[in-house]
Length: 401
Ligand SMILES: *Cc1c(COP(=O)(O)O)cnc(C)c1O
Ligand SMILES: [Zn+2]
Image (cartoon, rainbow, N blue to C red; front, side):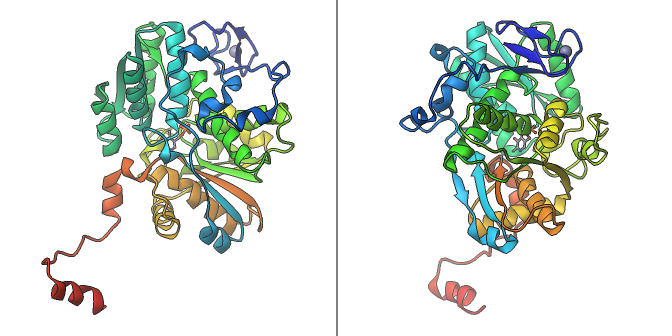
């Protein structure tokens, strides 16, 4: 069953619908946890992908479109953690098939598309959604249309969307404008929209929450920190941990902590005013293009997650993002794209501000792979030294430092 998060109006699973017909709010898929009589032990003998939790995925099991997404690394980061006086784990979502967590949502969303029998799928994207959609549409054999804000998409993401055969349209406008345009096309039924306004996307992404508490031996961490753009992922992870709580698999819940870039921070602004009312950022700007979003569609769900979990929301600057990106790469060997590093930059800031207590167990989600945005990575480094292939030349450079 699909339910409106605002007015509770219920819709049939097989209705193609993105927002509530009564009030215009966003929708959520309701999982009947009470009648889901399963033991958590059944997950252990299954392959380590998101479909391991298939009982919690509200789609037809015979129609699954998958690239074995999920089951991503969960790395304990002792160097960074001990410097900050906390216990730190990093969930490396760049290890998904196309290099971001979007694959989790796309697997479930594309499965739903097959169930509904659509022939065309589409999205607006800051990059990773299009890369993922293009790959999963290829796998499913469906036509794929993606709208990208002109000149603002990182190179690796653009390469993926084009190479997997999507029809790529470069839009004169930002992400929010592109999303509005493609949503209008979807409402006229020309394509099935697989942005995170589609509640089935979040059903896949909630598996990040499942995996974290499972990895921790059926315990919730004190806190989960992640970058927030369109605000789907923080909502999805909260839904995941809440479902496992309701199922009796864990007995506490994490403080959901969202980090935004200073130039694109409507959720943080609402949090600071302790309200649910979102004032969109008119011209969002940040080097972290994946979170360069001014009007997050899942703001209600995200703010509820933050308030209900006694969590927090904070901004970071582009400089703080780039510094955290480098620190994670050099101290822990984990290469992430700029938006992902917002979680680490936010962690550092919240420890400094005393919001995060010493000894807390914290999980940072790093959302996308370093190679998504090779230009930003190269620009942050000094150029390689040019040298002859000669042992004396090597010694001169390497031993005389
Ligand atoms: C999509 C994305 C985000 C933002 O996630 P939302 O669900 O839009 O809040 C953050 N980082 C990366 C790498 C992404 O691809
Ligand atoms: Zn409604």
